[in-house]
Structure formats: C-alpha cells, structure tokens
Amino acid sequence: MNDTTKDGSAVPERVRAELLDSFDEELELELEDEHLEGLFNDIAEHPSVSTLDRTVYFKELFRLQRELVKLQDWVVDQKLKVVVVFEGRDAAGKGGVIKRITQRLNPRVCRVAALPAPNDRQRTQWYFQRYAEHLPAAGEIVLFDRSWYNRAGVERVMGFCSNDEVEEFFRSVPDFERMLVRSGIILIKYWFSITDDEQNLRFRMRIHDPIKQWKLSPMDLESRRRWEAYTKAKEEMLARTHIPEARWWIVEADDKKRARLNCINHFLAQIPYQDVARPLVLLPERVRSPNYARAPVPDELHVPEIY
Image (cartoon, rainbow, N blue to C red; front, side, top):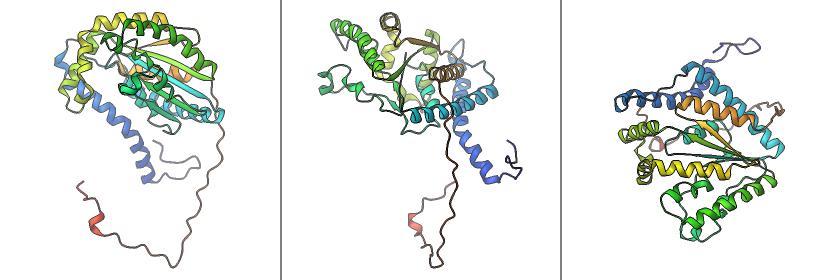
C-alpha cells in the first residue's frame, strides 16, 4: 500500500491499520478454506484446490466488490428492483458467493432471503406467497439463498409434495416470473454446478470440521444418497423453467474461487450501471464546551481485556 495520499501527505499509521483490517475479514475466510483443504487432503483422491493464484484472486475480488458498491448506488439512484436466485446442490458454494456479494454492501439495500421450511399455516397458502413477501421495493437487491425452486428440487426428491403439486409448479412458475419481470423486477437465476466427487469431498470436510458441522443437516446427508434423483429433478427444472424473460445461468463451481469471481462478474454485467455522483462529504468540527467533563466509567462495566 502507498504511504502517501493523492496530495502527497503521509498516511497515518492508524488509517493504514484500519484499511488493512477491512481486508483481513476476507483473508480470514480464505485462510479457513485453505486450512481445511490442507487438513483433509487425505480424505479424497482428488482434493479440491483452486488453481487460481491467490494474489490474482484477492485483487479481482476487491475490484469486483468496488464495482458492486457502484452497482448498489445505481440501484438506489435509479430505484431499481433486483432479485437474484441462487440454486444448486448442497455444498455447491452458494453461500460463499452470497457472502462475498453482501460483504461490503449496505444491508438496507442488499439483503439475503434464506427461508426455513414452511410452517403449517404457510403450507395452506398459495405456494409463492411466502416468497413474494421478500421481494424488493424500489432501490433494493434481494438475494434468494434457495427460492421457490425448492418445490422442483428438495420437496420433490424428498417426497414433501405430490406429483400434481410439482406439475402445478411447473405450469405456474413461468407465469409467476413473467409477472415479476413485467412489474419492473430484474430477475437473475444462477445454478451452481458441482460434480459428484466434489460434493462428496465437501461433505466429508464438514463432517471433520466442528465449526461447519452445523451445515450438515439430516436432509443434506439424505440428499447425498439421492444424488441421481436430484440430477433428474435438476435437469427437468432447468428444461421447463428456462424462459427468455428469466433464463438460467450455470456457474461451474468445483473451483470455489473461480466460481465466486465468475458469478460476481457476470452479475455485474447483467445490469448496466454508471457512477453516481456523491456530494462532497466534509467532517464538521466537534463542538467543544469548556464546561464538559467526561464522567468516569465504573470498572465493572468493562469487558475484561483478555487479549
């Protein structure tokens, strides 16, 4: 990092430290991935290791995240409504991409909808009703971490719905998505594709990692057994719901780093955006009163400084 600002003045060390700390968040996530890959290399014949240079990855990720901030400003300025659907098998990497998209964005503008299983009341509603509640207003981006396509995937494969309900879904979803688009919503749909061996590796890594074991539900384990049933369901879903108004995009996701960069880069390309002029921000001088004295904070209120 350069030690001077644009006007040639020195960058205070505390400012440098703050900037570096903002990058450490992403670095910690990547170190976690690399540590696990190295730790469990012996559990698969072909371990999952990205061939993308680490420096290139970070450089591109931070560049794309800067562009995401510009896109966010454009969405707010133009009052756009954006919906991005992320679908794929368990452990395909959807959550990792979503995390990198939202990492530096305003949560009031870009939010994630990750709905739990429907409750008894929701099961009696129009199928799309609980998803419609999470659609964006003007100036918002909503990322669906799984979506109404649950019916064509997990619900169908696990027997949580009838064949008639699946057929009704396939008849209804094109009309539902066309209505969304006609209403002014920009709808983008991604399917994250991984191989049988790669999912097997990622599941086994989670089994050995106490930090990530919570990600493995009994449903996830059963989905592993029903790999072929999921494949058939996915193929029919893509064939019957790939429409001109809301087409599917396939993200090759065996390589996590490449998948993240490719998906974010593609997402940015789907919405023509421009820089939004920001007013110059001037930090006002703090008002200082000669009679002000800060009251002491009782010791018992402090968090112990262990580190």
